[in-house]
Amino acid sequence: MFQPLPFPSHHRVNDPLWQRLWATYNDVITMLRSDGITTDVEMSDGEFTITAELPNGCELAIRASGETGAKALPLDRAELGAWHVVHLCSEGGDHHLVYDSARGDQAANGTDVLALMVVVLPHVKAEQDAAHQHLAASRGRTKVEAPENAEGPELPANVTALLAEYGIEVDPEDHTGTYRITFDLPDGTYLLCCPLDIDADGTPAAWKITRQHRHQPGHMQDVVPVDGEPCLFDTVRSHLASALSNASRR
Image (cartoon, rainbow, N blue to C red; front, side):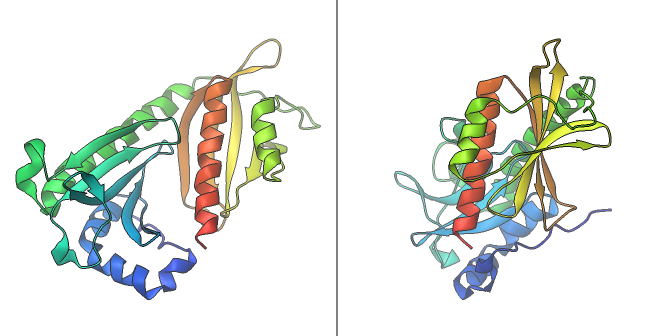
């Protein structure tokens, strides 16, 4: 049975402007949330964007389309002329156009929400399927069992240094026989880092990263396994940046 997503818990939910935007674009937000997609309205420097989380740490940014590309969503829905949707990842990551109903083959769609969803929902499902396939493939990988003193592979030095810059401490632990490293993020979430494919030297070839909401135990975000030190650093940095951004808006 479908379980409704928790309502956003940040302080902006009490802001009349945020409430007005949520109501103005409720049809779009409800369609996304009904498909299990965590969705919010972002307000930054007087500009408004609908954001939809993807399972790999990226997001869709839904805005209005203007003559030169994306622009902020108008407060008055009647002023909306077309939709502009971009797939965004962390700095240096993937960034590409998903939908623009002001130009190209989609120009005839204008503000049609169903036409928007015909493109957006399959895009999200494809991202979810890719993440699930990656996770399913990782289940065959061997996880190291922690010794009694809960010692095991350490996070790479560049990841530890990044966390130290923000005063974040890592906590190695043995959870039901599986070694993992956890650390809190500034927005009330935390990351679980489980080493995979431990070699003879005790070095993991990959890590499985999961982001858990501490105050919403049933709501978690699985991130595809990351191979190699650079990819692990980029993944942790992306989630840290997201958490810092969330915390700054509270």
